[in-house]
Image (tube, rainbow, N blue to C red; front, side):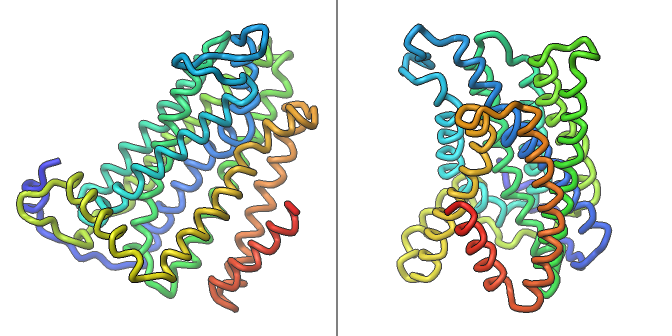
Length: 340
């Protein structure tokens, strides 16, 4: 990107705690949670596994790009690859977000690319598991990239004393949005035969619906969140990409000077990876290991969505009373006890 045109725009100082902006910001959680619930958590894992098994040789193996992979593990490998790509690219995008006045546009770009890729999952059928894998990689990487820019707006639209509340509201509304579409998808899936649809067609429509939902509701934050002066200024002659890479390198080289920060990041990587693994693989585990049907899995995860809404409301109050650290410790204890 060329920074010169960006620098010609006069910086605009806008107030925080604008209700209109905050409500617009909440709606991106409403928008993208449809992808998390309908695609990642419920339908894609079992369906992509079924497609991969249909393409497998008699030994149960497929060969994406010539690599021998057990068909039942294909989705897990695709998820792992998407996470690895996020680890490489998202820190650079985070650095770019600090310097760019175009982050609202970049937020929209990644959101719409992800939504389009998710909608493209409608065409996943037969034995074309590679199409499903590529579309999911694009969608999940774009999802993570859009979240980087989305989160970077929080310090701009909310003062420090309001950030916990605004963040909690975003999560809570996301649970409702993701749960609402999942409920509609469950209704469609349960009545597929009456509507003249096969189970596979119903799943494909549900996958595509998440992309459409994601794209449509992304329009709300894009029209309500306003661009502000970047947190940092570009050095002369440097573009955003080079600046992002250099800042990431400086941060990494100086990380040992901040041992508590390094410890926090390592801890976050470990516990967040565990949580995301449970969320991502729960549906496939339910189908492959527990023998649960898609309808049963969808109903259970739908219940979790609405429980999550009330949980966010409760922990917003807990964080206000004992602080964010204490609230996080309680949630981790609950997760550990539940999974243990």
